[in-house]
Image 1: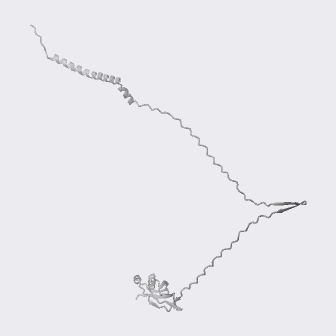
Image 2 (image 1 turned 30 degrees about the vertical axis):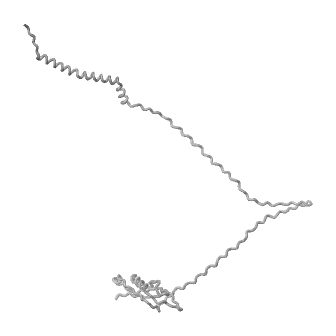
Image 3 (image 1 turned 120 degrees about the horizontal axis):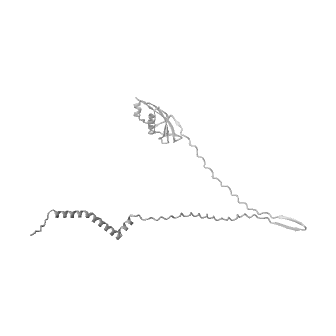
Length: 232
């Protein structure tokens, strides 16, 4: 009696290995076939045409236009001619000639020309008399004696003049008005120091005099007053 034996040994393993090798070798080929199938499908669907339209830039149409011919400027307008009216000539009277025929004797007389009336002569305006010139005012006279003080000048010795040792005599020329007040004080003779001269002038402006009387009325006069600045 014969017996059939089944073996699961090395023969079955070789078949599996061969199947795995076949799958490995057919895998890339299957991918290439699928890619070609998709490419043909895209071409059929028109997608490739759209891609080409997007990738290729559109053509730009350029048209050349001829430059316009410059127009000639219009001719200048002619200015209207202004016609001036002829000047009006003054009318001149023509003398009338009178001809008288008497016995073959011809005498010609000329009418006298018209006499123009002379314009009336107007009298020249009489200028008003010039105002009388004012009488010259006599300048006040200068007196050196008979001067009476109501309030004598009291000069203040300048402190700087004391420190500098300045001393001297100043003669002042004072214009005394009708009321006895000094109107003007000037330096007739300087002391040699401007501070002493100004101190004397200020003192004279504060003084008061008795009015000078002539012919029963007070008159302004000039008086000369000496002031002596002396350090003790």
